[in-house]
Amino acid sequence: MSQHFDALETRAPEVREAALMAALPAQVAHAKAKAPAFVELLKAVDAASVNSRNALAQLPVIRKTELLERQKASRAAGGNVFGGFSTLGFGQGMTRVFASPGTIYEPEGARADYWRMARTMFAAGFRPGELIHNCFSYHFTPAGSMMETGAHALGCTVFPGGIGQTEQQVTAMAELQPAGYIGTPSFLKIILEKAAEMGVALPSVRKALVSGEAFPPSLRDWMTAHGVDAYQCYATADVGLIAYETASREGLVLDEGVIVEIVRPGTGDPVPEGEVGELVITTLNPDYPLIRFGTGDLSAILPGTCPTGRTGQRIKGWMGRADQTTKIRGMFVHPGQVAEIVKRFPEVSKARLVVTGEMANDQMALHVETGLLADEGLKSRVSDAVRDVTKLRGEVHLVAPGSLANDGKVIEDARSYQ
Image 1 (cartoon, helix red, strand yellow):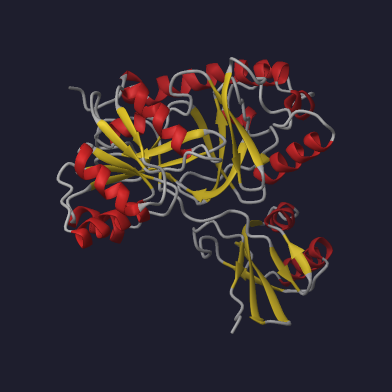
Image 2 (cartoon, helix red, strand yellow):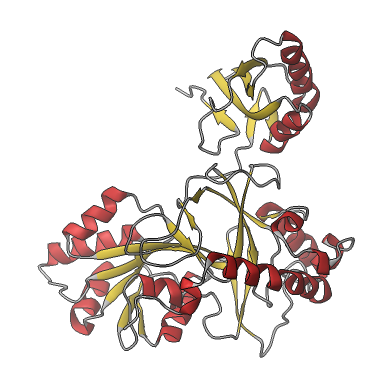
C-alpha cells in the first residue's frame, strides 16, 4: 500500500503552485459573487488579476476579530448569522452549524470530508477498515465532526467517545479494541494513566492523531514509551486542516486545499522564508471561501521538502499567538502600530517594542534593526514617530540587522507582575 494518501502529495512543487494559483482567481470571483461580506471587502478587486502570491498579498487580511465583529453586527441586524462569509444557507447543503468561543458560528457543508481530515489520519497511520476512538468534543465546536467525517472518508468506523468519563473510555477501548485514538494529547495521557490505575490493558491502541493543544517532544516521548505512536495536526474551525505531521517528524506539511502565507504580525505583508510570522490562510472551500484569513497563530516556513516524499511546503508548527496587543500606561498598543512606525523609515527593516518595569511603572523601548547604528537623527525621528503613533513616549535603540530574535514577537511584555 502507498505511503501517501494520494498523488497530490508528491506533485512537483512548481506543479502544485501553478494549480493553486490557477484556482485562486476563480475562488476570489466565487467569494465576490456568493458571499456578501466579500462583495464589500473585495469590491474594487479584479478577481481575474489575483493569480499570483504577489497579487494575493495586496488583498486585505480578515482576522478572527473582524470575522466575529461582522457576525455580531449581522446577527444584531437580523441578518446572516455567518456575517456574510458563507455561500450556503440552512438546508440540504449545510449539514451542521458549530459555535466557537466568541461566539463565532461556522457552517459545515455536505461534501464528503468537508474539513479535509482524511489526509492527516492517513499520515498518522490509520487505514481503511479500522475502528477509531474519537475523543474530540461532539457538541458546540466542530472538532468531533471534523475527525469523524475525515475517518469516514478514509473508510474507517468511529466510536464517538467525546470528552470526559475517563473510566468508561478505558472500558470501551478495552472491549472494542480500536486501532487508535484521536483527540487532545492531554486526554490521551489521562486515559492511559487511568487504564494503568485500573489494571486494564489497551493493547490495540498503538497510534494516535492529536490536536487542539501544544504537543511538545516530552509528551510525544511519553506516548512512545507507553506504546503509542502519536502524530499531530494543525487545523482550525474556520478553515479545517492546515498542516499535518508525518513519520519524518520534521515540521508539518501543508494541506493541499489551502494557500498559506506567513505575514508580519499586525500587517498583511509576507515575511521572508524562514522568518516567524502570522499564518494567513486562503481556503479553496467554495462553501466558506475565506480569503486571506488571519489565524492569529505564529509559525514559519521550513526549507526543503519532507523526507517521506511529500513535496508540499512545511511549517515549523504552532509557535504562539500573533495578537500581542499590550496595555501600556493605560493605552493599548497593537502590533500594527509598530508596523506603521517601521513603514515610515526605509532605513529600518524590523522592530520590536519591549515593555519592562513593574505595574504602574511601565517603561517601553523600541528596538529597530538598521545599518545606520550611529545615526542620532534617525533615532530622534523614530522616537517622534513612536510618540505620534502610540501617543506614548519611549526610548529607541538602534540595533544591527539580524539582532532581533526570529520568534514572531513584535511586542514583548517583559514586565514584572510580582
